[in-house]
Length: 173
Image (cartoon, rainbow, N blue to C red):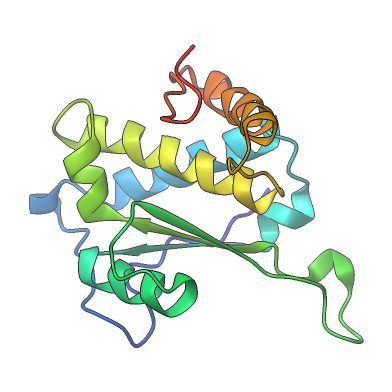
């Protein structure tokens, strides 16, 4: 099962987010995150085709702020954004159509991680991407009942990895 590699910058916006060893985000960290996303996505019910059409992008606070302002009208950074790809284009094979894009803010990952350092950042990044995947799968937390269904889907992904699923809208388990 393939998933596109993590890109380390938003195209044409902001500065690149470094993955150098000094920052703790080296190639091994990226690969571990990619493996975790694949495993969680399968547990959450993503198909092989959806995984092949998933793009992960890693950005910093300034870039995330621009994305959130452009797409949601809010001038603030956030930790993760999900952009569903929508319907396949006319003539496009639905099985080869993009699934969507997850944009992860590494600055937020560093701030929010329960444990400092690469291992804690990996757990936080994984939990955020699981949340983003739930959005790509059509879930939302804008209403209580919908939030419960979303949280259940996120828990499936986190349990597959042995991670807790702590969400401000649903508590932890």
